[in-house]
Length: 357
Image 1 (tube, rainbow, N blue to C red):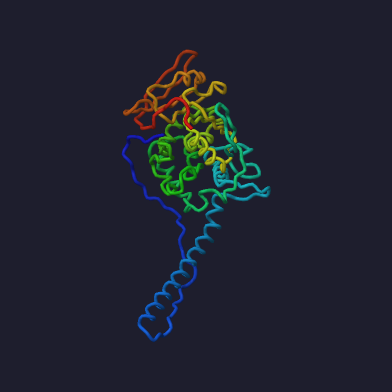
Image 2: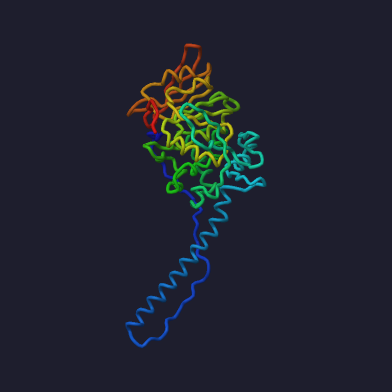
């Protein structure tokens, strides 16, 4: 999880905030009174009643707007009673022009994209993302709507920063980053910065996510086959990876974050993404080899276990270092041969062994 050493640029964001008060205010004149003291009390009382009516009217307008346009923007009920996803329909609408071809199962009936499996996942087990969520009760249901224009502006900025892969840009536009943050941070979701997700971890800034995935895909005309992510975090990068790879496996060592990622991903219904709770430095040898491996935490060196799980011709992108970190590309060229190349400066949380929680 990262934050590059490049200077930050600030870009104006346009948010569709919920505002408005229904009805017109009507003045209420107080009764004539005999004593000045009683008159003062009644004027105060009348003012309080007027303020209460205005507050109720405002709440009514906000509730009506929330139950209408905001909720419908995140979900759509289908004939079989399941909640679809704005993510699914958005990705589908861009499938032809941007190169993303969602799996048929992800677009069937519900129009959604896939989800993390319900229930507890024991250590050492791999769970396919499944579920039938109700987005009307989601914690983001009452968050001010973040418009598609803001997400498109983020993608335009990524292109200006040098990201050229059209499939990566389409994936970054398709995945709603604000759904992976706490409601209080949702309005900052599309700025180019890492943001806290708890447990001393962060969601990587959009540029570094796009850049690392672009490097992973270099030389690949279609989708990657099988990809391993080390450090699920809140699940955002895994969701983006699932748009450019046929199968994605993601490991998280902090159990509460693993559960948080499952909850974040559940409404999206991503059928080709599997979450795993365990020690990321050990990888998933029972599933490998992998065509691509991406690390979201920085170690002093690339773990040998991960290098051995890379398929011949496969690529690994990993941050390396402690205080002075760089992105390093590792390509496996033979059974016992790897080639490494240093790319650019970065800043990630440290890669740690074992599990927590």
